[in-house]
Amino acid sequence: MTMTEKYTSKLDDQKTSWIKKASILSEALPYMRRYSGRTIVIKYGGHAMGDEDLALSFAHDVVLMKQVGMNPIVVHGGGPQIGRMLDRLKIESSFVDGLRVTDKATVEVVEMVLSGSINKSIVGAINSVGGHAVGLSGKDNNLVVAEALRRTKKDPDSQIEQILDLGFVGYPKHVNADFLKMFKSTNIIPVIAPIGLGEKGETYNINADTMAGALAGAVKAERLLLLTDVAGVIGSDKQLLSDMTEIQTQKLIADGTIHGGMIPKVNTCLQAVDHGVGGAVIIDGRVEHALLLELFTEHGVGTLIRKQ
Image (tube, rainbow, N blue to C red; front, side, top):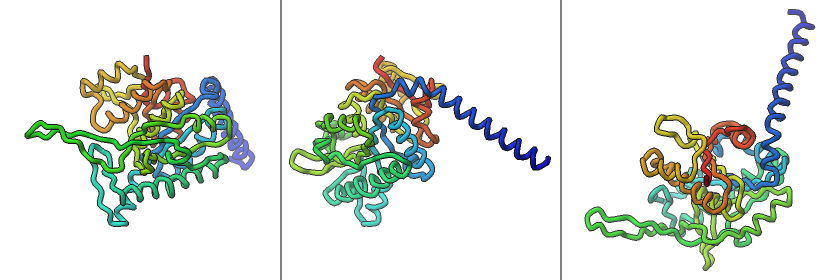
């Protein structure tokens, strides 16, 4: 092949690539219109947050969402990073039903990691690709007033229920929705650490899924997107369930199809939908551009849970 033929072939390949990209944008246009002006709450965590390439992909996706008229609100987790810092500081911690028991020493580390290094890293990534992000926690402007979360456990011998003290693990009691809605009319993307403020000034560690669900319900978001390390809800036939109603979801919990760690995520989705969110989606955050694939394609890539 001559140099001229190689050059022509390269141009043809580029042209094919450009046409493919234009076709994708054309197909995405109706979905951009559908979500324009709508609030999308995203829980960002899991493998997607720990992988550099996926983190950059996530930042690009969020910026694009804002640029096409959506109002993205990001809530992030940080369990592994908290665990590593506690180990470095030689602070022991334990778990009850997947929740980290949080004493005074632990909650100080939790806030330092979540509101500090993790939050600012996400903000920096979004700003580096052309966005305008600002880092917040639930303590800012009383965004989330929290109360202590209580769990009970039945003694196997006496069958008496005991109240478990989880320390400074909290649950959102009140959300300052007006503060969040303010960002809709700006070019700012809020990135929120799941820390709440108690009525007596206490600091509470809040599960990131729970935090995202509470914020989504408070602002009546069009979508709550939970990025996870699984494809979504898997049915009894081992296939991904792409769309479920509230009633269908409850049946799958009852018959054991939905089990283990998926139950609290699904319950977060059900609570959000019950509080006025248009739909909640469990998405595999390990897939590059998972947010765009969910929002800008006909069937999405995760499991959508809706009211009816």
